[in-house]
Image (cartoon, rainbow, N blue to C red; front, side, top):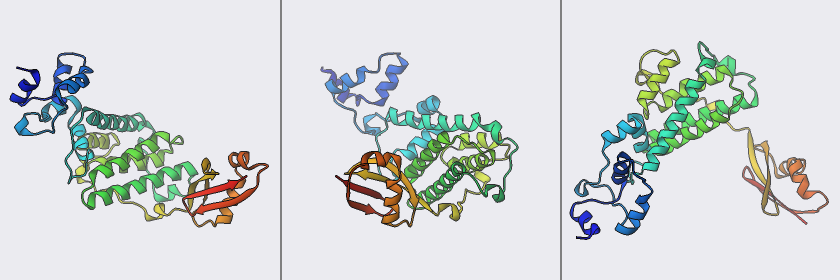
Length: 285
């Protein structure tokens, strides 16, 4: 009997289960691609085909929070999705990055408290991370409350975490606000990690019993906008201008930018193409 026929007869195929088996045997998993070429790619998971992923194995390997997060992130709830090892590993990396960032910066926020008065006259970087936090809270709430779009809610939290890693100032009061809200924001998706970190912040009880974060409408109002500036169709710089800035004002700011001047010096500006809040294209010759 050919191997292909044997696999079919016994409801077997080359899929994530095969990868788990090879890992347990400490075998080289790179042979999977060759096997798929020879014997066919993996089928969609189905009980009748005996090719489902064992959730107990996944929880044992990655933890319950990772399995929960990946299941919610992989696709909108109305769609099916193919379970992939790379997908769950990506979810696991996100959770580890989140956990590491909070725990590595706990000393900065320990015993720190804040009021709204503390957030007046913040510098640009502090204000930027607060705005990102409150934009994320709104996004997550809307996505959950509207058609249970958990995948896009999680994607928004991933963006916030990336912004946190780029946040250099680390104002303790700002960080404290971000940590408290971010932990509660992610708690429905990763409840075990959230409860652990909540207690590490000095909070009592379970995140489940806390109010879900709300956002400050004032922080959602954009007063400035970053727009790309093109020279003859090629992006050469990004400038920051007031949201309501006119074309003339934006062109003036662009032409004073050193990165733009390198491409316009000694040349004639023959045309401008401007889409407010989106892009400015300077045509020169």
